[in-house]
Image 1 (cartoon, rainbow, N blue to C red):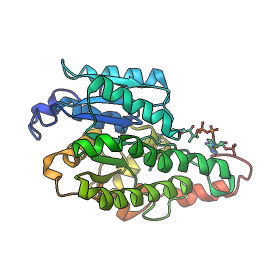
Image 2: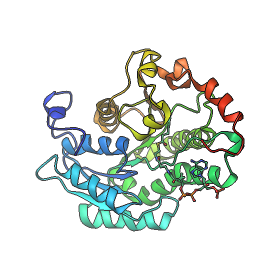
Image 3: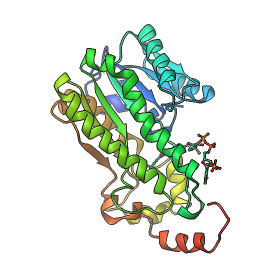
Image 4: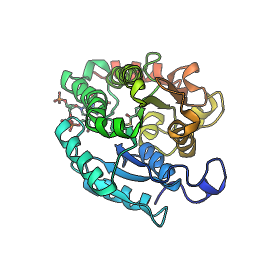
Length: 289
Ligand code: HXC
């Protein structure tokens, strides 16, 4: 089932044909965040290519998203690992062949698991950095000619956990800090070509796998610790995405749009159990969280 529906259009925040004729290329497109981002763009007229590793997941996401608009073209591009730039080039060629062009790129493929430093192997760190950071670079590398031709725009899906120290997320924090740096430098280099590059940093968004893992049954407590007193919704992410790709953001590049209800300013993603969890981790040498 798609997350959004026609009510997203009829609420009237955005023109229903805002992205007519545009094509978005999405890595990690089967994950909750990237899927809802794509749903919003497709509801507002875009066509889309859903890129990922797992065929079952990309096929299901593409089918769900396509169901949102009768004339939508949404293709599934499975068996693509963003760590391999050649497989991304193949995906880009297929997209241009089937959908004609690429205007927008969402670089959202990411790896994540909780691990304390003591149990985080060098290879585990490398895997996450390779997926999140090298994978983001590879994605733009593969899409560059299309972005240049169409004066396109990029959204990197980042995070806030590198703004301060988040335990058990050393690997992800390091990778996402790199993603922000990549986006900033691309904004400067590619700005003269008419290409915009921004990051979207979601905070605790309800109904995502990431939140289930982080919250571990403490959702109410998390919400109470968030300045806006609630978890984020997928619609919050959809609106931020539409804004960044819309003409309303035509002078916005090299920025990070944080959608987190103010969470990161209070630290620990609203979860004040971390110190307790750290002590437990240190007390359990040899175990993996
Ligand atoms: C410790 C772990 C681990 C775990 C894997 N590893 N899972 N170490 N705790 N839970 C280690 C392995 O032991 C291995 O190291 C190394 O990582 C590589 O594992 P592989 O399975 O061989 O690698 P690969 O197939 O490349 O998979 C990488 C992966 C992937 C990152 C582990 O399975 C993955 O991405 N899973 C989750 C996907 C996901 O949840 N995506 C949503 C992200 S949400 P050794 O030393 O044994 O060889 C997100 C939000 C961020 O990113 C912001 C949050 C606030």
